[in-house]
Length: 265
Length: 98
Length: 133
Image 1 (cartoon, helix red, strand yellow):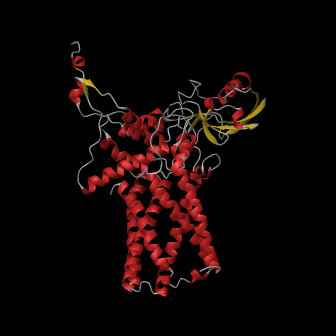
Image 2 (image 1 turned 180 degrees about the vertical axis):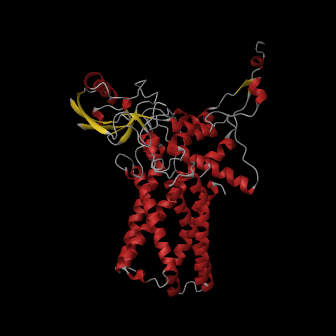
Image 3 (image 1 turned 30 degrees about the vertical axis):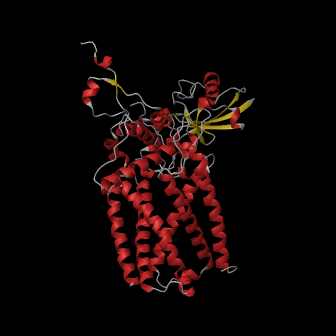
């Protein structure tokens, strides 16, 4: 079947404004958008630039706006779109480097500010471990869904707040903040609080659910951000009125004496 | 004040507006049917309504503005400006009520 | 740097108006915001204009009644949603993915808001026009 592709082209070294290129490609039932783009690059126009890696929705490199909605090129079949004319643009709310390739630098800077890793205070235990932190199923379930993020940037492109507020932390980063704050092994919620609870933090999410609509991994950032708000509010209310904070349920240490007998270096 | 407390107040005042606003709009009906006839109660209700709605409205404006102008200096100064506007409106209108 | 001369990010307020392909919550977000700003304008007018002659104009009365009803109903739903009461529990992300925010209690609340909004709007308009009340 012949399908027409209308693709956003922009090369900052040559062009002063973006232009559109139109290609006709023969696709079969199983072809994904990425297959079609590579076919164009190989057979018709080698200057077409795109970023991809794994071809199976794991790496999160090939996010683009396909027919007006954010999708992974490798995760979308051409014929499932049911249209003869397919428009492909780079992700919105990101600077364009070339053609369909966008610059994620700013997003990763924001991600670093919320400390996306497990923070612990027991230095002694970390240096000389005596056991393991075996999680129960409900402990794992509290964060497992939100840990699947592949950082493809689709939610950032879809979010109506990011489109006007350049300082907003973005759904991806807030989801990450919740994933690590709710983790029963983590003790760094207070350290992240000053960033998440700021004017451009989680309260600029207004539940438009555009992020949940486009997420290719079933993470539902709209859900985790609302839980983050709940967590922050109960924390700051307790601090304001009682002057103390709620004790978090933690994963218990299962002592394993044989671990501590590590070989000396 | 933390952003979470500001937004909690935003939601609390929103619910308060629903209650006091309903009384404010229906007060004419109440008086006509002779259910509640207390001018002071209506005035107090009006005062709570006024304070809540000013907070809710101006905080809403603040939220929209700091999203539209994502600059540090603007984020820091807009709160003060809106507090002054809100207080001015509150004093002006509460003088009219009493 | 590799991105010298790169264009500024694409898409500004147009991100608000991009509705095709997204669910109804995004429309409600847009309407909530616009109605809120309209109510602020109405409020300032109401506070400053003490003789309130505009209250006699039927169209204005209907318009402000309708947007206040929507803003209030959707606002209640948003308070419940934003504190995580109706968005569903965390589940395993297994393909085919289920989004608990886009189904279940949250969707039910959206339907409820719309139904109650239509009923209250009908009552309000009929009341103003003088059919009932």
